Length: 493
Ligand SMILES: Cc1cc2nc3c(=O)[nH]c(=O)nc-3n(C[C@H](O)[C@H](O)[C@H](O)COP(=O)(O)OP(=O)(O)OC[C@H]3O[C@@H](n4cnc5c(N)ncnc54)[C@H](O)[C@@H]3O)c2cc1C
Image: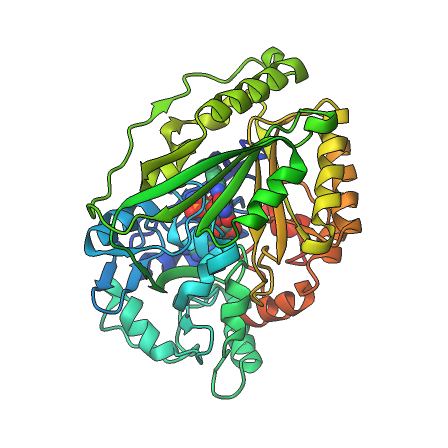
């Protein structure tokens, strides 16, 4: 019996005591779900969500739950285990001329974590989010039942069993019926999920829409089938363009909306006419070149930055220096995949840069019509409060995709990192009001403190999500600290 240990997300806030189980196959996972857990549980991939979405008294790691990575070289369809990291997938598929069509800012994210947050990359305006490239998901419900779901596909339970069972092969289970139960309440869970899914046991695309972006609350993703994109080189042709202020950043992103990848770094502490100055980074896949995936070496931050250095003057100096340095280096270059997509992975433990108390990332999206005004207001408010960030990232986003809790929507997203301190929380509440007033929402994968009211006002499909969650997990077994806070799971543990 493993004991509890302190666990946190990438922001190192909040921290909780949790028991972390690492099942190695479906049998072990089912044993856990069938009475082997002491309370609420949630899946965890690489623990790179910033806040509390992967925190619960019982954490189930997907890391050892299969190592499948099978690519159809002709069609580019990949079937892979959810615990694999995106970098591990790239290492396998890039030499074969295929690429993950959506990549977040770190290659250490797991496939399951990418599905659960329906992550976006620097190409959301062109290619949408991660789950828009998913053809099928295999997941384990709270009852232990294994189901498949897809964007336009009915669920198929029996087939999913045989595909996902691994060591458990040979064990036959009927849809929902003899699947391991999680105690008495879970027998009810199994029956309820069958009732809710209709007489033939089909969830249709609803379970897919709830699971993509559903932060692990519908079940544990075991495998994903993804449509990859073809590439003919592992190099990126990139270009960086300086922008004198926020208006110019927006103009450059609009002007280059045909660019495959685009993102802007902002000096969040510049004021007056220079407010929002920064650098816009664009990139395309090179047409010819080697198909080899090289991982960059990283240097690690040795200790947490003393809080005394993380003040407004220190951060303003960093931002101004970085802006001028990037301006000097502006122009075209050829970069490897790691360097372009995962620049921060070159600095191990960079979350220590914000000091021992941890930090919070505030990422929100505003619809097109309100984005310029709302983002300027957020920057002005944060700067006036003397709060700054090393990393302030602005991206253009394409249309929403209909997944019930997915974050992206047509407009602009801004992400700001802030060291954790008592005076930060009232500021973030003010920023919440600005985001709500401009019709936006806050990204669940980065959130550690949003209120239930703000969540419900900004995620209009939360009740539809909850209805599906209740159908597949009526006893509310899958609960995270975040889902409790946001009122997504009803009862407290
Ligand atoms: C440096 C950095 C850069 C980032 N850049 C971006 C970016 O550009 N775009 C973006 O969208 N996000 C970005 N993120 C956020 C990150 O992509 C998401 O938080 C992602 O969910 C983390 O995946 P993970 O494997 O670490 O999951 P975890 O943090 O372990 O878990 C996150 C959520 O996924 C659920 N989950 C994990 N595995 C499973 C599973 N097998 N089945 C069901 N649920 C599961 C958990 O329950 C939890 O709710 C970034 C994070 C960092 C640290």
